[in-house]
View (spheres, rainbow, N blue to C red):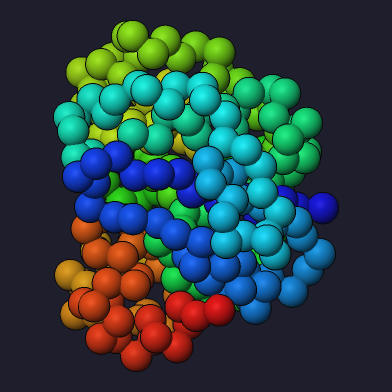
Length: 236
């Protein structure tokens, strides 16, 4: 059975977004509406409050204190590298997909989640990195070098020096290089900032399945809530 996993942890002081249990419940509801197949939904979190109806997993401490190589105010998601630990199947099962909380699901997820490759990651968002960690699909144990080769003292700077953008996604891009299986707009996976707002003036593409709100605007932001399609789909 596929595990659908999200993360919720306390944002550092001054970070642009705050995530609460309502965002987990909304994602769970959207997955339930758009993935009509048996699945396990879990939230890895440091605060299970308000999530009595969600299976929660205690957030692991690994790499919690590794800062973003881009400086304060930028997200540091190195904790997600544990997804590549070969032993992660003890926690998440043998097959799992991770989805960020600032995602709006608008269409059938079956062709997104039922890919057969051992590793699939969202691509096509930043010319300085091949991959974006907002959504990843793994068979447990795939690409173990992302976990085993990471050095918290040196790896972030190595990825930055190579021109790779982001924290965990910068390291994933640097460690794996180009050529991994990805989701793109051809699969119905869109960036709100890049593909919807700038290229389509906020209009939802007809073939969209997911819209990722990576960046300063969240689905619950007043700006995003002005769009009818966001209000229709981003709900419990």
